[in-house]
Image 1 (cartoon, rainbow, N blue to C red):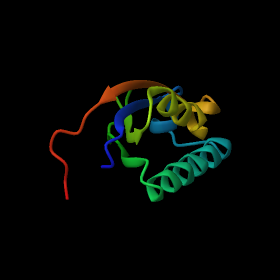
Image 2: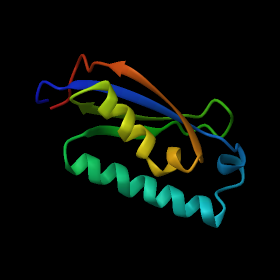
Image 3: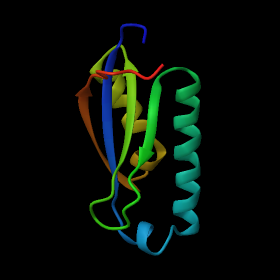
Image 4: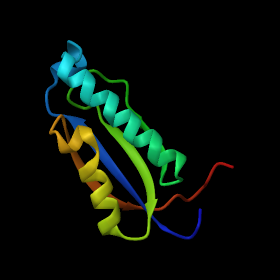
Length: 103
């Protein structure tokens, strides 16, 4: 893990219907770009893990665990996530540290 800082950002849909009714065509497009963005960062070793709970209610959330050289870099990554940037999902950034890495 290259000795960089780790962060986690939590995301939640702004519209509950995204989970209960399914995405609109526009939301589906944004979600596709969200996945492509995270996959690209994973290939570069920045995103370590991404996923979401399988609840279909207001408690549902996703997480992205990443490593960067600074909190500002992590915040920029979060803000540039298409799902966040296009306000499909709200996001909160937290400092994080993986205690037990999986090899």
